[in-house]
Length: 194
Image 1 (cartoon, rainbow, N blue to C red):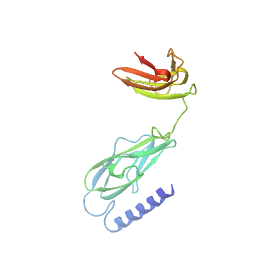
Image 2 (cartoon, rainbow, N blue to C red; image 1 turned 135 degrees about the horizontal axis):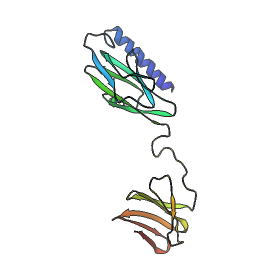
Image 3 (cartoon, rainbow, N blue to C red; image 1 turned 135 degrees about the vertical axis):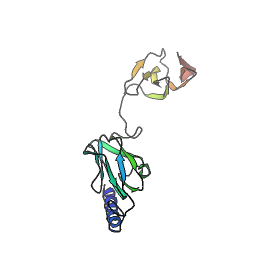
Image 4 (cartoon, rainbow, N blue to C red; image 1 turned 90 degrees about the vertical axis):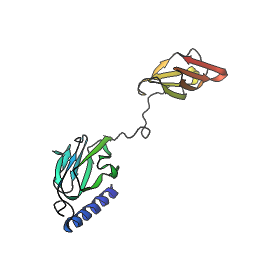
């Protein structure tokens, strides 16, 4: 958070210098162009350092005329994180502060995602049964296999249903191919579905 504050302070200082030297909003004589934020952000807000843009959950001013350099700040709502810029601001990546040169009409977008994170970074326990040893995905279905012939299936990876395998042998792997699931386990066990 401290780095973001220091970066914001640095950009504000540079913007003030640009304005004082004839660049920035309202100066420079290079023409005035429209900057638009589209689509209107949900779960966050975009503001320009100089008056003009206040778009998203904090306001509805989603376009304004500028000349020179414009600095935009993306602020997520509670429970959300800033996920990156799009459109003419895409070069700013995932930094919440973006500086854009207004040499033509431009459109930017800001993306906000739930703070739960990106898939693979936060985990939720969904099953606490027999130890599982393998999982695969195919034909719109997750299939997990494990000890004592355990087979579980899920269409969404959230709700799991225990299936009957017909064996008590421990299953060690599962794969999908040729429209078929194949599970393998101890003592040469091979199960197929369908």
